[in-house]
Length: 123
Image (cartoon, rainbow, N blue to C red; front, top):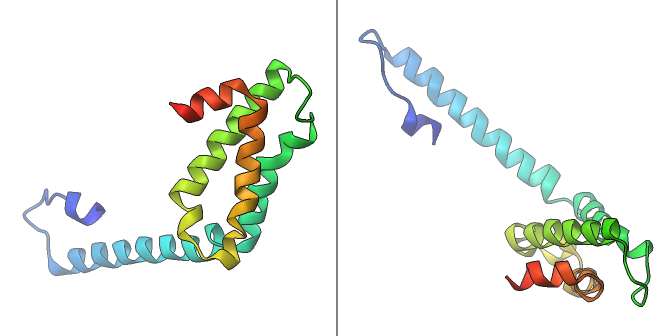
């Protein structure tokens, strides 16, 4: 993307500058691939996301009425979890992601306990 948007502003642009730009673009591409392979698509990162998404479940039970802060936290967790799952979570191997039922239970808890979360998810 960066290479296509690069505009030549000087008449003294030579092949050396072009090769440097090309190498920089390759470096950026390799760095992005490394981050995808090593950080975001690792078991540790998915475990972290699962714990982060399910943390409000410990604050209140299903039958208890949530406070405004707990409901807002539940909505934020639902937004984060659904964005994560639909953009990258379901594209990974099951061994990294874990069982889909675990993620389903996390989403269901937020949907069952928070009217605002249900409204956001439905729209």
